[in-house]
Length: 274
Image 1 (cartoon, helix red, strand yellow):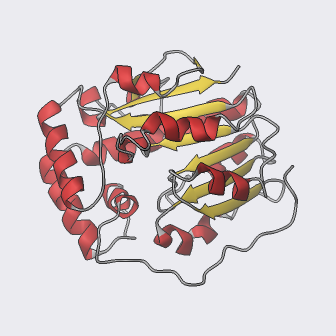
Image 2 (cartoon, rainbow, N blue to C red):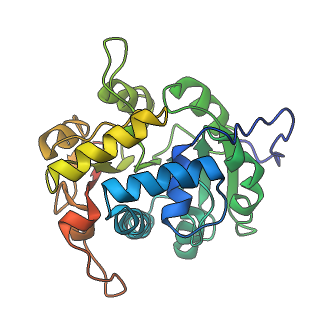
Image 3 (tube, rainbow, N blue to C red):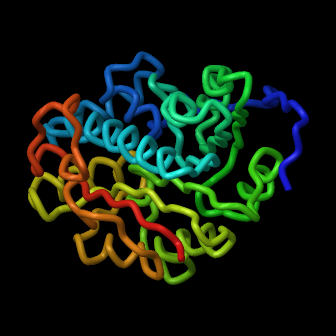
């Protein structure tokens, strides 16, 4: 069960490692943020040369997150776990969820220490709700879930958000992306939701291959997956309409600008457990 004790985000021993590009800070650069360093901007510049639609893709992912979160909150879910949070960019997930239900509880998790230094912006939620931040790697579900249980009741449904993060998990003999997903989802209660977007080569294979090379040369795994492979990551879950589609095609709203499948470069989907 979750407790109601206030938690302070630890600030001790932070090593930002600013001389090596990090995917969260590169993503911040695509979104027009300023929380990035020369190594991130240099790598992001090369990524934009390789995949000029990277900025469109980043904004399409954020728009998808907002739509999916709002939809799930309106369905009555009041607990959210966001993996691969990234640098705070308003409106953040808790702002969307608590805009629907002021009592919603949200836990953010990321492995970039600089996100920890900005976590205060992620903890400014409503008085009725709760927000928390966990420093952890997506490959270590147990650590993240144990810490999330300070704020979330994992015996009740949770919306697990994995937006624009699983393509940084390369398939290896010891662990693949489906293993990572199942390590989280196997611990969730029936009625939980899984929210996901994922980079794909289906719309622009040549540019995608160049993008993968840029990230790998910067020390970050990046593995695009096909629609069939992304759909497999929802194995055992019931997809909501319209299924796994290009991220701008998932129930777009009037506030969403026109983005082509090629510009988005990602698939998105939302599914329910049980």
